[in-house]
Amino acid sequence: MYRTILVPLDGSEVAECVLPHVQALIRADQKINIALLYVVEALDTPFTDPSFKTKIESEARSAAEKYLNSVRSRINYSGTIRCEVVIGKPADSIIDYSNKQNIDLIIMATHGRSGVDKWIRGSVADKVIRASQIPVWLVQACAAENDMYDKWPKITVLVPLDGSDIAASAIEQAETLARQLGNNNVEIVIIRVCELFSQPHQYPPHMSMSWEEYVNYETNRCTGICTEYVQDVEKKLKEQGFNVRSEVLTGNVADKIADYANTNPINLIVMSTHGRSGIGLWAFGSITEKVLAAAKRPILLIRHR
Image 1 (cartoon, rainbow, N blue to C red):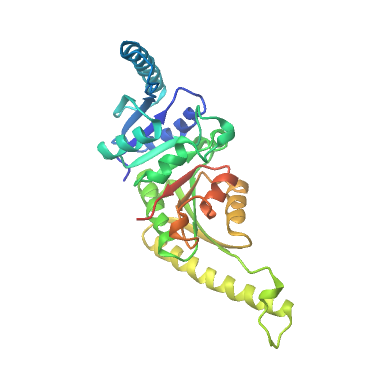
Image 2: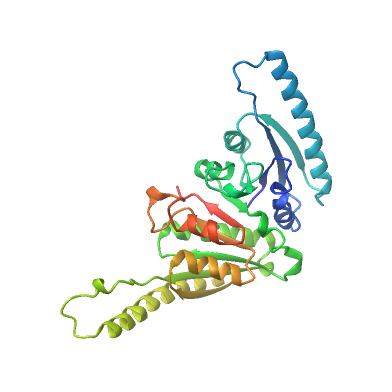
């Protein structure tokens, strides 16, 4: 269960787009501890007078504390919400705080003051997901209005799988969310994308069937394997009492995941940071990066250990 949630903020409206998602998590559970964190960037200029540096950082800390208190007053919650201000580098401070305070989940915007055009690559969020050992729930600013939880009867969680144990680690996080919010309030959608080869030169030599027949054969074979897999996962989850359904799609993996999420009432995508795309690639340069760039839904990333 997510008992301690870290919410990094920077004073911008963009960063505050995470608040509806925090509110959704706590509405069914009053035992969650929330930490609102504001990182005041330290003055590293070597020519800065020490007394001036202390004065500037002190003023920034006071302003940050005032801001966090105002945010806390807007969250409808009777449980514990603490406001924390630290001085340092944003990404490093977020990771350091999450490690020292035994945080279970980080919920943050994909960009704040670092600029909308940078979105995620090279941003604070980028650095956090690369270093975090705990799940990171990323919210695009454009996703805030689309995913107001009170407008939909159920929270729908999309879990893309590829048949690997690494990708399947995302199922555990979906189960955690369902238990926390109530199984009756959460629908888990398992999908697997059957991605076929597209180049004619891959056609095996000396085949007795035509190219069209071969493509049809491979499509049916791939779809059959994927269907058997997701149905097995669906069956196991239903036996545990979860509300779940599964689908098999055909096409480019990243495109199909993003398209499905964008065209269906999906509240959250839950993915491991790498699947068959390779451990070395981790998130960027992989399917995960492409989904992050194309999907207009929040994404909960789990770094497989």
